[in-house]
Length: 446
Image (cartoon, rainbow, N blue to C red):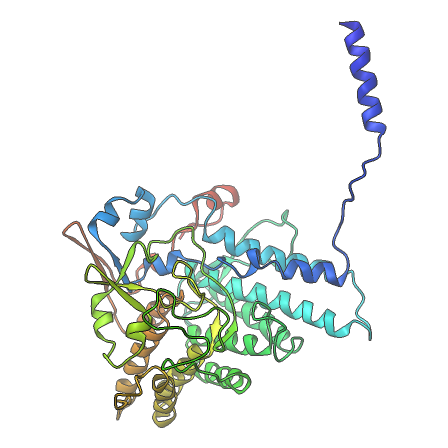
């Protein structure tokens, strides 16, 4: 035994004295930091929340599908608290926020000079954009809707502004969350190029589009109109569904190509807590009936499976992955809704009809959206928003903001012959924070 101890001790000393040939690399150059921001797997692809879309009312589950789901998924479908743990929407969003913060922290150690100023600015602007993008997505899901009267008291999410994981997590107010998104985006607007090198990178167009979306969620229609207009000045391209290089046969399983000309910034929905996948979900039949037969979206967006509509129209080039980035069709609808809300009905109708003409079968006389009063026009534009932006992770926040304005929308599901309803302004519209986050951090649960 003594001999064994001597041999082992000597071997360990020799091992510890050896120099490792491996290189431990700490990111410190602009190229290194850009590499962190170009990690699409963590920042763009399958990273935005899905539980909000799975909680919304654009789809339903057939009884056999529902009964085959795990209990935790059934709870989501019933709008009941559930024991969600890692991995989940929270972890996806905050991984992206961490990478953005890490990039900003590393950038502080790199001097900006005349030789690198454009690259330096692009990196800082990109990191600020990514932090804002994912902070907004998390706020949409886990916080109450922005309400000017209660925004200081309503609990938002945790604002992480550093890569130092030793800083305790504390929930900020809803107002502070939106203010931080806006301040990051306004700073990014001064730093980013007008057009990106690649559509998975941010740009001035993307910043303007995200500001328009943010202000729309807040109910600040004048500001949302301004930024949607600024974004459309950069890119106002709409694909013609009658025929376009980025559109295949509308009857095909995958009609729309990825990174098409309407895309301003490319991102995808996560796939962790998804009930509404094409294999599971069926589109609400009343919503499907709202598409006119001459509306080419009815063919491009849906297959009929055993008599029920199944969604296939995402801008990801895949039926199983949902587009949640920024695109020109959303901007036309934001500007139209803002103009309608502000009483500019002619401008509102012009925008929505410009969009719809590109979705209408040319062999049939186009039937434009018409209206003579604010409420009628606003209602019709919001219906077109629902039809155009299906499965993009926006319906849940739209329900919240419409109900803030008094729409009193009650959503319901029939489960094994039992009618389940979610009343307007229910506390459940701020979805449950994962259980492990509550246990580890001690922050308040919704």
